[in-house]
Length: 286
Image 1: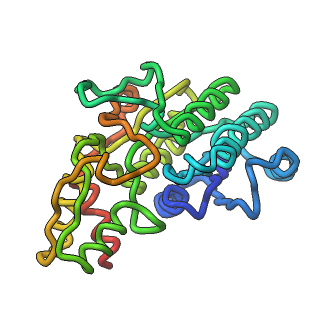
Image 2: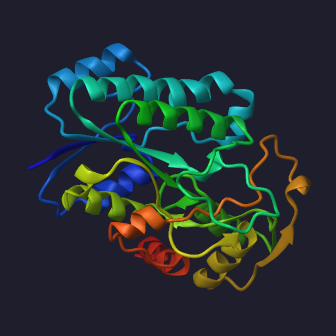
C-alpha cells in the first residue's frame, strides 16, 4: 500500500482528490497549511521525517491572479520558494513529488491557434504565471513530475462556476470576456486522473511535464453561457465583453489551450468539458 500526502488539502483539487480516492487501495492523507506549511523548511523536514511517505502531491498554491500583481513577494514565496523547499526535501527523502501547475505559464496571443505542447517555452504574462513557472523549474530540477492544468473549477471553494451561478441568480445580465480562450477543467476529473496515475503505478515511468485538461476549448463567455444553460437559469443573459473593459491588473493569455498528448499516450481517459461540467452540476444539485 502506497502512502500519499496531498498538500493544500482544503482547496478545490485537494477536496476532489479526497473524493476520488475513497475507494483506493492506497492511503491518501490531506494536509493544510496549519499542519504542513511548504514555505517552512523546518516544518517540511520535520513532517517528512515523522511520516512514512511514498508520494507527495503538491496542490498548495497562491492562486489569486489579481492579488499576485500587488503581492509578488507572497506569490513567489508559495509558488516558487515553497516548491523549492518541498522538492528538495522530497528528493532527500526519496519521495516522488507530483506538482500541479497552470496554463498561465504561457503567454499566448490572439493569433495562436495551436495548443501548447509540454516542451514549448514558457513566457508568463503576469506575476502568478511567473511564480508558477519558477516553481515548475524547482520541481523538475529535483526529480518531480509536473502536471499543468487550466481553468479549474469544482463544487467547492471560490471558482468561476460558483461565481457565475451566484450572479446569474441575482442579475438579468452578466458580461464575460470572449477574448481569452482555454479549456474549463473540472477539479474532479483532474483528481480522477491523478489517482489513476498513482493507483495504476503509472507514475513510476513518468518524467517531466504533462498536461491535463478536459477535452475541447472555450472562451470564458462560452463557459459562462454553458453554466447558465445547464443550470436552467432563464432570467439572466450572458453577454460578451473584452478583457480591457474589465480593468484588471494582471494580463491573461489570449490563448492557453494545452495539448494533452503525453497524458493521452499513457492511457488516461478524458471527457469533454461540457460532460464534466454536467457531472459537477449534478454534485452541486444533490
